[in-house]
Image: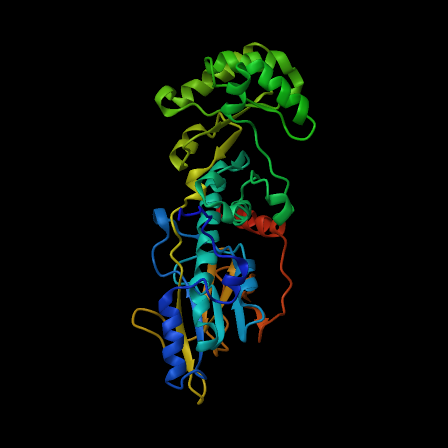
Length: 398
């Protein structure tokens, strides 16, 4: 009998009931239950002990909403710092409290949700920090399994992307997706002019009209052609020149800008895409208006979050207890300003002293779930993004 092809993905029910997990968590739960230890309570801490990729000093905490969706209605209590917080190495991000047997199988999906979103959000924020007030467009979902398209768009937007391209983002996130046009559109028409005219005719009032100008002719020739045809209707042009034909992208952009300027089209924006990373953006940010980034955000280096027991209660009260190399005890996180954090033991009454004596330390480790019940209102994706951007702006004032 021939195999019938299928899409391999875990459905939401399999995730929420603990089936989507690592086998050793299932075996651990079974051993604990068989040994009569199912009533042992723990406090587990999510944190980052590995180095942040690229030698960075901070990362963006993202994926909290999905993590709470996973843990709510379970017999656990959850504390966390707010989603979108810039965090540093060894800083507690979340504490899950309950009988270990009740949530052991959820460690793998919990870390997966947080690591996936934090990795993408961190990379997007790192690029947005470099780009500043220029436009960052994210269209990297083609690098990923389609099941995670909305999650990837959400994380990139939280990290600072000005627009996202996934068609499902309006349904899941309430964010209208944006995009330009692919080379395929122009190739199907057989020439740029007709493809541009039809695109502008259908979508010119719905989105900013950006013409792709490197499909069939020299980039400056196509850029000037688009500007002459559409005039004020043309918001910008996009360059996605393949590396084999690129040479110096900066030289190409300078040539286009000069050509557009001397022909009276100084206001036409220039967007560059295709294999962009921090170095490429740094070399172009003074002469480019926007950057379309895909793979380097979608396939961002992993923020290697881990989860460890830091306190245990076998029926005689909470005792700080953890493995070698980790700091025992549940902890509070006090913030004075972005990236000025002080970690205190859970039971400590001592308040830290901020570097600026006028600042007041605030404990940002909030309770989000109490015995399975959500007890904290969650911000919108727009509010989380604004929170991230406010912290990025602060970095330059330090």
